[in-house]
Length: 313
Image 1 (cartoon, rainbow, N blue to C red):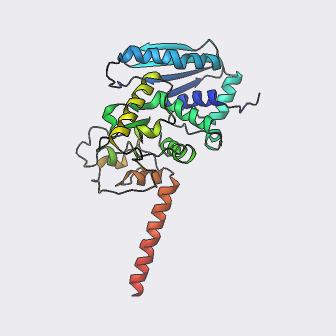
Image 2 (cartoon, one colour):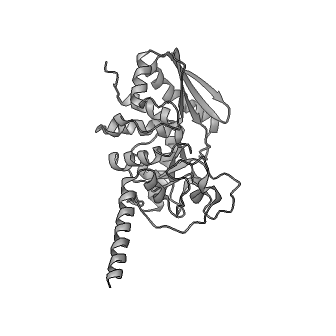
Image 3 (cartoon, one colour):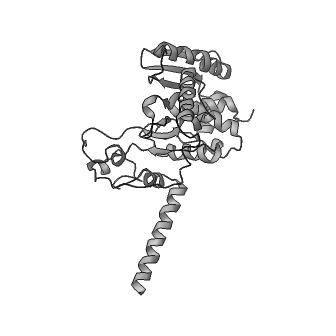
């Protein structure tokens, strides 16, 4: 077995870890924990938390046990979450393989889409990785609809990680051909654009927003999420044109945002700290989006050209 071995099952597991996983390795034992947060799906006639647990036990647990053995433990915190926990010796081949895939990143602040996933040409592996992430960090409910009433799913990335959203967006759009509507960054300019609530921390999760009917090609293994996805995707198709929503080109309109006192907050990473943003795609550029960066470079070149032309005139 190659230590960099990865297949669809491993890709799914790694997706869950990067979505809501923690890894603690003391050099002797390695403990891997994955938490499934409970977000009420607001689905009619649905037994909320009990159905959530049943869905995970019947779909996710058997798959993890088939991959990792019977040592996978499950616990629940009523109305809050379901947690998987598995423990191995630090020298176990599973641990070695996982660390290699994750490039020795062991916490959500540093997790990125692994190179072996980003560079893969196997759409099944990429889809399973995204599905694993979505099963733990995907959020689908009626309140996620846009201003036109079109239903969306959100892939939530915890605020401390500013690299992952752009990388996930790239996987979705360029590898799986799934349009991303936009990314709502957990930045004060986006979360509190009028700077009216500076004391209520706007450093919230980042949300990758995708229309429900577009996400059907990935979907969820967690049954209650898949049920909501199918229902809301069908509503989109009935009420709106199925083709609604286009690929994010790296830029869209921008609206002037107020200067915010938390723009220099020490919790923000260096790449965005101390900067002001009027649009989500400007943050995407700062966080590595090649399309947003190309647009900004082109715009600056045009400004420079017209400035030079005016000076010559």
